[in-house]
Each structure stands twice: as C-alpha cells, then as structure tokens.
Amino acid sequence: MTAAVEQPPVRGVPWWLVLVEGILAVVLGVFLIMQPAKTFAIMVQVLAIYWLIDGIFKIVSIFLDSHQWGWKLFAGVIGILAGLVLLGQPIFSAVLFGLTVTWVMGFFGIVYGIIGIIQFFQGAGWVSIVLGVLSIIFGIILLMNTALAALSLPWVIAIFLIAGGIMAIIAAFQLR
Image 1 (tube, rainbow, N blue to C red):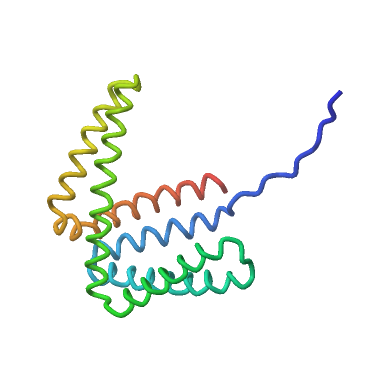
Image 2: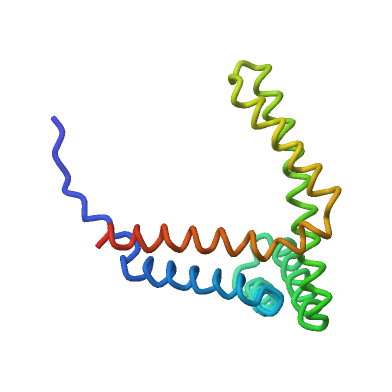
C-alpha cells in the first residue's frame, strides 16, 4: 500500500526575472552592434573584476572550509592574476581575450568534428558525419583566420545575445 504524498509546488525562476534578463541581453547585443570595440572592452573589464573578486573569495573560502584547499588556492590565485592582468591592460586584454576564445573554439570544433566522425562509424547515422566534417572545417577556418574571427567575435556574441534575449522575453511571457 502506498500513500500519496503531496509535493509542494515547484517554484521556478520568477517570470519577471527572465524578462529582465532577456531585455538586458537584447540591450547588450544592440550595444555590441553599435559600438563593438567599446562594449567588448567594457565586457572584458567586467569579466576582469568578476575574476578578481571571485579569486579573492576562493582564497577566503579556504579558511571557512578547508576541503580541497589546494584547488581553491590555485583557482583563487589564477582568478586574481587574470583579473589584474585584464584590468592592467584593457585594450590588449580585449584583443587577447578575443584571440583566445577564437583559438579555443577552433580546437573544440576540430575535436567535436572528430568525435562526430567516430560516432558515425559506431552507427550514429549520417547526420553525425556531416556535422563532424562541418565542425572540422569550421575549426580549421577559425584557426587559419584567427585575427579576422576575433574581430568578428563581438558581432557573433551580439547576434546570440539578441536572439537569446528575444527567446527569454517570449519565455517570460509564457511563464506569466
């Protein structure tokens, strides 16, 4: 015999918070399209401040909970150093950040493409090999044109922010 247990209603994210997130994403996306260099530099500075504060909190957290203190110390020092470097050289940091993201995306594109091709030979279907080959081509293009890809990164981020923001706004009204 089983007794029915009444579950409390699951509370999700408030609809208005999703709406605010969507609006902010669209606004940031529009700023990236209108003033890509300034907006991207500001975004990198915000990231630098976040890494700096997060690094400090990670080191302080060692004194509150010494579990995995080595990793916390390592992450804290890296966060503080990355934050200080980005804050100290804002223009250079924005360019270096764009190049680094482009390199990472290129390498991941190639790795994901290889995984897709391997999955094809394991019976995953023809879609996996098509996407795998396209992913490898995309990765190679990024790695061969790193500077151009890094320069276009603010616009790519802007498109994703605007599209994601619009979807978040629509989702907010559906949650309401």
